[in-house]
Image 1: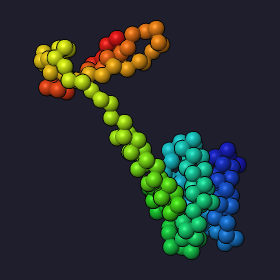
Image 2 (image 1 turned 90 degrees about the vertical axis):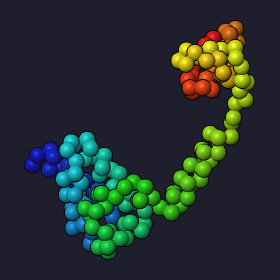
Image 3 (image 1 turned 30 degrees about the horizontal axis):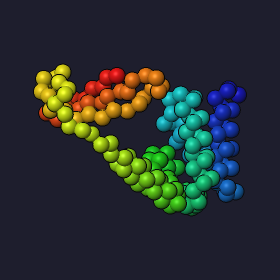
Length: 157
């Protein structure tokens, strides 16, 4: 018996355990076969099997759908990761996205308009800038400048 055969048998056993149903041996072997046809390397195959086992263990609705025959094993392999999330995971991801968006838009850095700097791209002097301490306290502050004419950004110390 070859190494690949042993790995495939072990994968089928893992999927069978993740399905949790005594009659799911045929489903597990179908799922393993579908995974095997979609993976070109042993590394990607093993990774896909681990992901599928975790999915079947954590998502009761998908597990029961596969065991009841409502979802074919080959279609489960083609399902996008976002479609396999539990409702609570979908809610927490949505909340995290909204919080991240709020954090990214909340901090608006005040910028002063000035004609003190000359744009290297369009040679105009209509710019906005702000200064920030990006290094040690004994180093000079870094000045961030943006041209209001062409949108070119640059910085200097």
